[in-house]
Image (cartoon, rainbow, N blue to C red; front, top):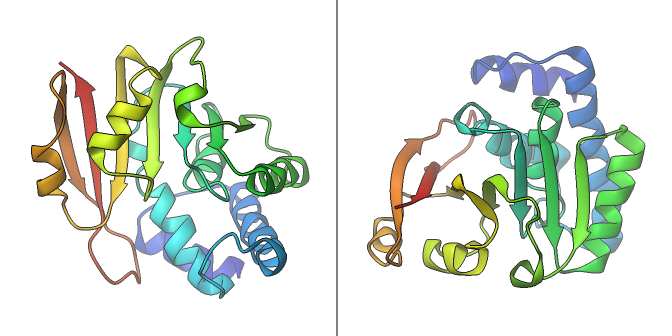
Length: 205
């Protein structure tokens, strides 16, 4: 699996250390193992997980600004775990309301020796951001409108919302509440992935 990952990283022009590659593969192995009992993802094939979970998560890393991030509705740790592995100097809070997912995240944290993640079981609207975060990240979590409404208390005044989307969500952008503006939309290239991917960066006005 490491060879497959290396080929995907090369195609995406991403350079990682051997330890980071081992951690990413270790995460996929844990996801595959726990998925049988916990039903964490609909992707069953570890090779496909490399494309649809690992690469799909880490291609956004160059666009993130700051050191403290929260991944809301992280599920089994996506994109937070892969991002924490490729950005070890930053810290990622992994927020999910389901206990079984948070138990899995704690196991991943323990087995991979990740010191820069904090799994938290909470509903997003009940989670206090003290101190506030540089970035609020979500992948397939909610509409942009719901994201900023539910998570408005999480970023600092200069912080950003990072929404990982498929096709460019122009209809969602038109319904953003007052006080929020789309700062940038980045088309993302994910090797071997069919379909479009976009990162929408939202800031306070």
